[in-house]
Image 1 (cartoon, rainbow, N blue to C red):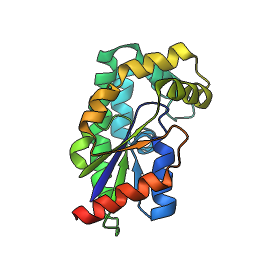
Image 2 (image 1 turned 135 degrees about the vertical axis):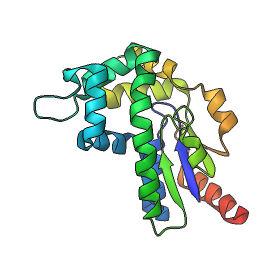
Image 3 (image 1 turned 30 degrees about the horizontal axis):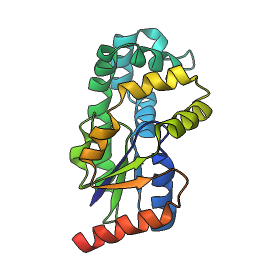
Length: 194
């Protein structure tokens, strides 16, 4: 079984993913981290990103120039779609390989854009991590050293909370209430279903 973990910017999905790993021994594939790794190691992705963005996509040391790529991505929906059309198939292929090598019967896939990327179809159960928008905004500003305007702009490009709630099989509310009891309850439900 694969649990798809998603949530808007600043919701705490990475923290919930770590709890799944540390407290329940569930291996987690972090799509953002693995996408960055692939963009740094795959010659095919490097070539495609340079063709899209230009040579500034990579710094002189040969590593992905994350600020330049982020700027390009958030500049327009068309740019985001072009980058995603290159990166998402590589991440999907990498996840399937990773998943086939996991001995655990339960695995998790963490992605901020689980629904937008089409990765939702890789999950048997979609777990939404949610928090009030103002709290998410404050967390993301602090974490990314970004302005409220920058974070709101990124939020506006993500799927709405309503759409995420509609797609979710279960919800974790990360507004300061304890998370482990919520996760335990979700996992118990999954055990009774399977």
